[in-house]
Image (cartoon, rainbow, N blue to C red; front, side, top):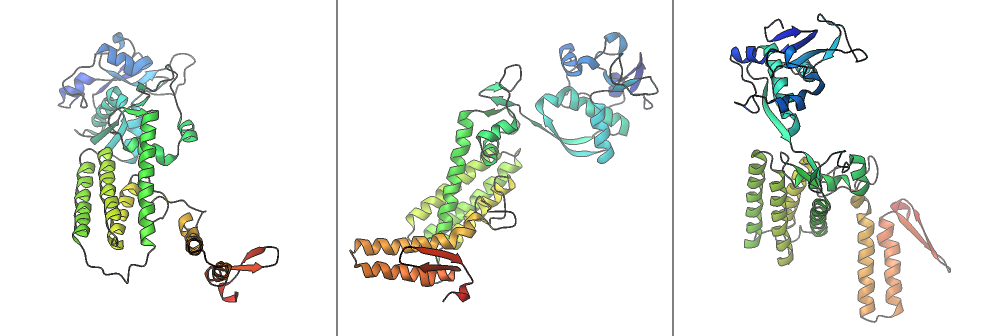
Length: 383
């Protein structure tokens, strides 16, 4: 009001859009060169719109609205009333951030009138020509092709969605769609997300299996296949960076990662001795990008974490030595069985896994005539 961009009318205060534009400011910024229609004003302002008799111009909007009997109200120089719809956001943001915001976000339905009017009143107050540098407007969520709405009875809460799907699957679903377009929640989009999750999980499992092998004693020189995969990794990194720089196209990034994983899987299948450090480098990069997207949680260096408890390592790290011992023992038994070995061979393998493998892991196995029992113990104390 003191700057000349607001005026009182019947106990309410309205923003003077003509005065604002007359001083060289732009209005509406998010849809320049277009005047507000009566339908837009009615839809946007609702009960705060007031009659045209109260306003100098139909596009003017409420900064302070006089309260009717029974409505919430606060005292003001213009009488009892309540803040306009847009003013509270401008006040809070200005109080915390100041007279310039770098990035402002919200749903696409808030573009007008909320964000346009929010900017106008903030710029009028701060006497600046650009209160916000960048706006990010997210698309609406659609349920099976229709905009989510209580009136259509297709409303779903986050809690309901999480009862059917994991957080990771929902994150994949959103990442695989443009953030600034309508997003579809349907059986197909969720199934696609689950398929991507399974694809990456299988890849991480294959990589970890190879990395368990001792590679130090192997020859480390690169082959043409090694160089080809390394070049693919470098190209994928460039593509990911370009997609993120171009309007945060996460759906493209996911596809770039899928393509990279596909090439790495081909390499793992074709090469008798894949280079551990090379495939580790690929897996680390894929994990890094998925962690940036919030898809990878926890502290696992590679892949999806399955934490075994607060402060503990991943589930895989905890059980890996025991699973390795079991798989190794199973393989020896299978070989002995295929060779139709004598019972003594099987008993020797059983003794070896008891006295060496499990003892090293801190597990004491005690045999009796009836059965065997196991106890946790200090490996050094197990003879």
